[in-house]
Length: 309
Image 1: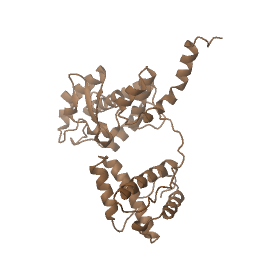
Image 2: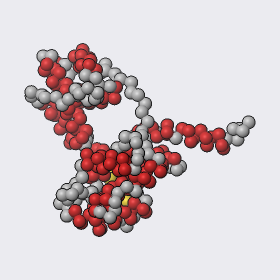
Image 3: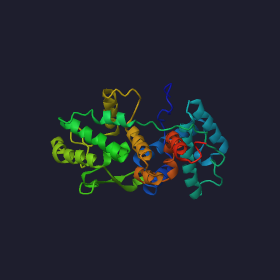
Image 4: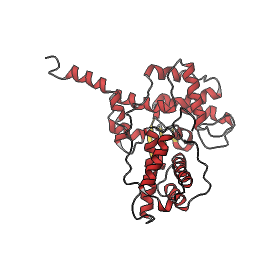
Protein backbone atom coordinates (compact mmCIF):
# COMPACT_ATOMS: atom_id res chain seq x y z
CA UNK A 1 0.00 0.00 0.00
CA UNK A 2 1.25 3.48 -0.83
CA UNK A 3 2.15 5.46 2.26
CA UNK A 4 -0.49 8.00 3.24
CA UNK A 5 -3.40 6.29 1.49
CA UNK A 6 -6.25 4.38 3.01
CA UNK A 7 -6.83 1.66 0.45
CA UNK A 8 -5.23 -1.69 -0.18
CA UNK A 9 -3.34 -2.37 -3.36
CA UNK A 10 -5.39 -4.45 -5.78
CA UNK A 11 -4.57 -8.02 -4.77
CA UNK A 12 -3.18 -10.45 -7.25
CA UNK A 13 -5.17 -13.65 -6.71
CA UNK A 14 -3.62 -16.82 -8.13
CA UNK A 15 -7.02 -18.46 -8.55
CA UNK A 16 -10.67 -17.70 -8.26
CA UNK A 17 -13.07 -19.40 -5.88
CA UNK A 18 -16.50 -20.70 -6.90
CA UNK A 19 -18.12 -19.48 -3.65
CA UNK A 20 -16.96 -15.93 -4.24
CA UNK A 21 -17.95 -16.07 -7.91
CA UNK A 22 -21.43 -17.26 -6.91
CA UNK A 23 -21.81 -14.45 -4.38
CA UNK A 24 -20.72 -11.77 -6.86
CA UNK A 25 -23.16 -13.12 -9.41
CA UNK A 26 -25.90 -12.99 -6.74
CA UNK A 27 -25.12 -9.34 -5.87
CA UNK A 28 -25.18 -8.40 -9.55
CA UNK A 29 -28.39 -10.19 -10.56
CA UNK A 30 -30.49 -10.39 -7.40
CA UNK A 31 -29.48 -7.18 -5.59
CA UNK A 32 -28.90 -5.05 -8.67
CA UNK A 33 -25.74 -3.42 -7.35
CA UNK A 34 -23.85 -0.94 -9.49
CA UNK A 35 -20.60 -1.86 -11.24
CA UNK A 36 -18.66 0.31 -8.80
CA UNK A 37 -20.14 -1.49 -5.78
CA UNK A 38 -19.55 -4.88 -7.39
CA UNK A 39 -15.93 -3.94 -8.09
CA UNK A 40 -15.43 -2.97 -4.43
CA UNK A 41 -16.95 -6.26 -3.26
CA UNK A 42 -14.73 -8.22 -5.62
CA UNK A 43 -11.59 -6.41 -4.49
CA UNK A 44 -12.39 -6.89 -0.79
CA UNK A 45 -13.02 -10.61 -1.24
CA UNK A 46 -9.94 -11.00 -3.44
CA UNK A 47 -7.89 -9.45 -0.63
CA UNK A 48 -9.33 -11.98 1.82
CA UNK A 49 -8.59 -14.87 -0.54
CA UNK A 50 -4.99 -13.72 -1.07
CA UNK A 51 -4.48 -13.51 2.71
CA UNK A 52 -5.87 -17.03 3.22
CA UNK A 53 -3.64 -18.45 0.51
CA UNK A 54 -0.55 -16.84 2.05
CA UNK A 55 -1.45 -18.29 5.48
CA UNK A 56 -2.34 -21.71 4.03
CA UNK A 57 -5.98 -21.38 5.15
CA UNK A 58 -8.89 -22.69 3.15
CA UNK A 59 -12.03 -20.61 2.63
CA UNK A 60 -14.09 -23.74 3.20
CA UNK A 61 -12.60 -24.20 6.71
CA UNK A 62 -12.56 -20.53 7.72
CA UNK A 63 -12.98 -19.78 11.44
CA UNK A 64 -13.65 -16.59 13.37
CA UNK A 65 -10.04 -16.73 14.60
CA UNK A 66 -8.79 -16.60 11.02
CA UNK A 67 -11.01 -13.59 10.39
CA UNK A 68 -9.59 -11.84 13.44
CA UNK A 69 -6.12 -12.44 11.99
CA UNK A 70 -7.32 -10.93 8.71
CA UNK A 71 -8.68 -7.89 10.55
CA UNK A 72 -5.28 -7.45 12.23
CA UNK A 73 -3.67 -7.73 8.81
CA UNK A 74 -5.92 -4.97 7.46
CA UNK A 75 -5.03 -2.69 10.36
CA UNK A 76 -1.33 -3.36 9.78
CA UNK A 77 -1.83 -2.07 6.23
CA UNK A 78 -2.93 1.28 7.65
CA UNK A 79 -6.63 1.07 6.89
CA UNK A 80 -8.70 3.45 8.97
CA UNK A 81 -12.12 2.93 10.52
CA UNK A 82 -14.20 3.79 7.47
CA UNK A 83 -12.32 1.45 5.13
CA UNK A 84 -12.31 -1.31 7.74
CA UNK A 85 -16.06 -0.93 8.14
CA UNK A 86 -16.51 -1.31 4.38
CA UNK A 87 -14.38 -4.47 4.33
CA UNK A 88 -16.33 -5.96 7.23
CA UNK A 89 -19.63 -5.11 5.55
CA UNK A 90 -18.47 -6.99 2.45
CA UNK A 91 -17.44 -9.98 4.56
CA UNK A 92 -20.74 -10.07 6.45
CA UNK A 93 -22.66 -9.99 3.18
CA UNK A 94 -20.60 -12.83 1.76
CA UNK A 95 -20.84 -15.02 4.87
CA UNK A 96 -24.57 -14.34 5.20
CA UNK A 97 -24.96 -15.63 1.65
CA UNK A 98 -22.70 -18.58 2.45
CA UNK A 99 -24.89 -19.50 5.43
CA UNK A 100 -28.00 -19.38 3.23
CA UNK A 101 -26.26 -21.79 0.87
CA UNK A 102 -25.34 -24.05 3.83
CA UNK A 103 -21.64 -23.77 3.07
CA UNK A 104 -20.84 -23.22 6.77
CA UNK A 105 -22.32 -24.70 9.90
CA UNK A 106 -21.55 -21.52 11.92
CA UNK A 107 -21.15 -17.97 10.63
CA UNK A 108 -17.42 -17.08 10.88
CA UNK A 109 -18.24 -13.34 10.86
CA UNK A 110 -20.78 -13.24 13.70
CA UNK A 111 -18.29 -11.98 16.30
CA UNK A 112 -16.78 -9.23 14.19
CA UNK A 113 -17.86 -5.72 15.21
CA UNK A 114 -17.51 -2.57 13.16
CA UNK A 115 -14.87 -0.03 14.19
CA UNK A 116 -16.29 3.23 15.50
CA UNK A 117 -16.64 5.69 12.64
CA UNK A 118 -15.87 9.36 13.07
CA UNK A 119 -18.78 11.72 12.45
CA UNK A 120 -17.93 13.56 9.26
CA UNK A 121 -20.11 16.38 8.06
CA UNK A 122 -20.40 16.84 4.29
CA UNK A 123 -18.52 19.67 2.63
CA UNK A 124 -20.77 22.12 0.79
CA UNK A 125 -20.50 25.40 -1.08
CA UNK A 126 -22.12 28.66 -0.09
CA UNK A 127 -24.67 30.20 -2.43
CA UNK A 128 -22.09 32.80 -3.46
CA UNK A 129 -19.52 30.08 -4.25
CA UNK A 130 -22.11 28.17 -6.29
CA UNK A 131 -22.83 31.34 -8.29
CA UNK A 132 -19.12 31.80 -8.97
CA UNK A 133 -18.77 28.19 -10.11
CA UNK A 134 -21.76 28.41 -12.45
CA UNK A 135 -20.36 31.59 -13.99
CA UNK A 136 -17.03 30.02 -15.01
CA UNK A 137 -17.80 28.04 -18.23
CA UNK A 138 -17.47 30.03 -21.46
CA UNK A 139 -20.87 29.43 -23.05
CA UNK A 140 -19.63 30.83 -26.37
CA UNK A 141 -17.85 27.52 -26.95
CA UNK A 142 -19.48 24.11 -27.27
CA UNK A 143 -17.41 22.67 -24.39
CA UNK A 144 -18.25 25.64 -22.20
CA UNK A 145 -21.97 25.31 -22.97
CA UNK A 146 -21.80 21.61 -22.13
CA UNK A 147 -20.04 22.34 -18.85
CA UNK A 148 -22.50 25.09 -17.97
CA UNK A 149 -25.42 22.66 -18.45
CA UNK A 150 -23.57 19.99 -16.48
CA UNK A 151 -22.87 22.25 -13.49
CA UNK A 152 -26.41 23.64 -13.50
CA UNK A 153 -27.83 20.13 -13.49
CA UNK A 154 -25.56 18.89 -10.69
CA UNK A 155 -26.76 21.71 -8.47
CA UNK A 156 -30.39 21.83 -9.64
CA UNK A 157 -31.04 18.11 -9.11
CA UNK A 158 -28.47 17.02 -6.48
CA UNK A 159 -27.16 14.27 -8.71
CA UNK A 160 -24.39 11.79 -8.03
CA UNK A 161 -21.71 12.01 -10.72
CA UNK A 162 -22.51 8.42 -11.76
CA UNK A 163 -26.14 9.48 -12.30
CA UNK A 164 -25.14 12.60 -14.25
CA UNK A 165 -23.04 10.77 -16.82
CA UNK A 166 -25.70 8.07 -17.35
CA UNK A 167 -28.58 10.45 -18.19
CA UNK A 168 -29.89 9.97 -21.72
CA UNK A 169 -31.92 12.31 -23.87
CA UNK A 170 -35.14 10.37 -23.29
CA UNK A 171 -34.66 10.68 -19.51
CA UNK A 172 -35.47 14.40 -19.67
CA UNK A 173 -39.00 15.72 -20.22
CA UNK A 174 -38.62 19.38 -21.28
CA UNK A 175 -42.38 19.96 -21.20
CA UNK A 176 -42.55 19.62 -17.41
CA UNK A 177 -38.86 19.97 -16.48
CA UNK A 178 -38.51 16.49 -14.97
CA UNK A 179 -35.47 14.21 -15.00
CA UNK A 180 -35.72 10.45 -14.68
CA UNK A 181 -32.74 9.28 -12.68
CA UNK A 182 -31.50 5.74 -12.12
CA UNK A 183 -29.63 5.73 -8.81
CA UNK A 184 -27.94 3.08 -6.70
CA UNK A 185 -29.29 -0.42 -7.26
CA UNK A 186 -30.95 0.82 -10.49
CA UNK A 187 -33.66 2.50 -8.40
CA UNK A 188 -35.62 5.04 -10.41
CA UNK A 189 -36.69 8.47 -9.16
CA UNK A 190 -38.13 11.60 -10.76
CA UNK A 191 -36.44 14.92 -9.98
CA UNK A 192 -37.75 18.35 -11.05
CA UNK A 193 -35.30 21.06 -12.07
CA UNK A 194 -35.86 24.81 -11.88
CA UNK A 195 -36.62 27.01 -14.89
CA UNK A 196 -33.11 28.43 -15.29
CA UNK A 197 -31.59 24.93 -15.41
CA UNK A 198 -34.30 23.88 -17.89
CA UNK A 199 -33.37 26.74 -20.22
CA UNK A 200 -29.66 25.97 -20.12
CA UNK A 201 -30.20 22.23 -20.59
CA UNK A 202 -32.64 22.68 -23.45
CA UNK A 203 -30.28 25.10 -25.23
CA UNK A 204 -27.40 22.65 -24.84
CA UNK A 205 -29.41 19.67 -26.08
CA UNK A 206 -31.00 21.45 -29.04
CA UNK A 207 -28.12 23.61 -30.24
CA UNK A 208 -24.81 22.48 -28.75
CA UNK A 209 -25.03 18.71 -28.28
CA UNK A 210 -25.41 17.96 -32.04
CA UNK A 211 -22.05 19.72 -32.59
CA UNK A 212 -20.36 16.85 -30.70
CA UNK A 213 -21.54 14.42 -33.41
CA UNK A 214 -22.91 11.98 -30.82
CA UNK A 215 -22.00 8.31 -31.01
CA UNK A 216 -23.80 7.59 -27.71
CA UNK A 217 -27.25 8.37 -26.29
CA UNK A 218 -25.90 10.08 -23.17
CA UNK A 219 -26.73 13.77 -22.76
CA UNK A 220 -23.20 14.81 -21.77
CA UNK A 221 -20.50 13.92 -24.29
CA UNK A 222 -16.76 14.29 -24.65
CA UNK A 223 -14.93 15.70 -27.67
CA UNK A 224 -15.28 12.37 -29.48
CA UNK A 225 -19.05 12.25 -29.05
CA UNK A 226 -18.87 9.53 -26.42
CA UNK A 227 -20.17 9.66 -22.86
CA UNK A 228 -18.22 11.57 -20.23
CA UNK A 229 -16.42 9.61 -17.51
CA UNK A 230 -16.49 10.19 -13.75
CA UNK A 231 -12.84 11.19 -13.91
CA UNK A 232 -13.56 13.67 -16.68
CA UNK A 233 -16.29 15.39 -14.67
CA UNK A 234 -14.05 15.43 -11.57
CA UNK A 235 -11.26 17.19 -13.49
CA UNK A 236 -13.69 19.79 -14.84
CA UNK A 237 -14.97 20.54 -11.34
CA UNK A 238 -11.42 20.99 -10.07
CA UNK A 239 -10.58 23.34 -12.92
CA UNK A 240 -13.63 25.54 -12.49
CA UNK A 241 -13.14 25.63 -8.72
CA UNK A 242 -9.62 26.99 -9.27
CA UNK A 243 -10.94 29.57 -11.73
CA UNK A 244 -13.60 30.60 -9.18
CA UNK A 245 -10.87 31.06 -6.51
CA UNK A 246 -12.36 28.35 -4.30
CA UNK A 247 -9.41 27.14 -2.24
CA UNK A 248 -11.08 24.14 -0.61
CA UNK A 249 -10.90 20.73 -2.23
CA UNK A 250 -14.27 19.99 -3.82
CA UNK A 251 -15.68 17.27 -6.05
CA UNK A 252 -18.87 16.66 -8.05
CA UNK A 253 -20.43 15.31 -4.83
CA UNK A 254 -19.95 18.73 -3.24
CA UNK A 255 -22.74 19.99 -5.52
CA UNK A 256 -25.03 17.26 -4.17
CA UNK A 257 -24.24 18.24 -0.58
CA UNK A 258 -24.81 21.91 -1.46
CA UNK A 259 -28.16 21.07 -3.09
CA UNK A 260 -29.40 19.29 0.04
CA UNK A 261 -28.06 21.88 2.46
CA UNK A 262 -29.54 24.83 0.59
CA UNK A 263 -32.94 23.13 0.29
CA UNK A 264 -33.08 22.48 4.03
CA UNK A 265 -31.80 25.97 4.74
CA UNK A 266 -34.63 27.32 2.60
CA UNK A 267 -37.28 25.45 4.58
CA UNK A 268 -37.63 22.10 2.76
CA UNK A 269 -38.56 19.16 4.98
CA UNK A 270 -36.19 16.23 5.46
CA UNK A 271 -38.51 13.69 3.83
CA UNK A 272 -38.69 15.72 0.60
CA UNK A 273 -34.91 16.06 0.45
CA UNK A 274 -34.59 12.32 1.05
CA UNK A 275 -36.80 11.59 -1.96
CA UNK A 276 -34.96 14.05 -4.18
CA UNK A 277 -31.57 12.61 -3.24
CA UNK A 278 -32.76 9.04 -3.68
CA UNK A 279 -31.74 7.93 -0.18
CA UNK A 280 -33.31 4.59 0.72
CA UNK A 281 -33.06 5.41 4.43
CA UNK A 282 -33.82 8.84 5.88
CA UNK A 283 -30.91 8.31 8.29
CA UNK A 284 -28.60 9.00 5.34
CA UNK A 285 -30.28 12.40 4.89
CA UNK A 286 -30.24 13.34 8.57
CA UNK A 287 -26.53 14.15 8.48
CA UNK A 288 -27.43 17.48 6.87
CA UNK A 289 -29.42 18.53 9.92
CA UNK A 290 -26.15 18.88 11.86
CA UNK A 291 -25.08 21.63 9.47
CA UNK A 292 -28.27 23.54 10.16
CA UNK A 293 -28.11 23.25 13.95
CA UNK A 294 -26.98 26.85 14.34
CA UNK A 295 -29.88 28.16 12.27
CA UNK A 296 -32.40 26.08 14.21
CA UNK A 297 -31.01 27.45 17.46
CA UNK A 298 -31.31 31.04 16.27
CA UNK A 299 -34.89 30.46 15.10
CA UNK A 300 -35.75 28.95 18.47
CA UNK A 301 -34.27 31.91 20.32
CA UNK A 302 -36.04 34.39 18.06
CA UNK A 303 -39.54 32.91 18.17
CA UNK A 304 -39.89 30.97 21.43
CA UNK A 305 -42.05 33.06 23.78
CA UNK A 306 -39.73 32.59 26.76
CA UNK A 307 -36.46 33.35 24.96
CA UNK A 308 -36.49 36.99 26.12
CA UNK A 309 -37.00 36.13 29.77
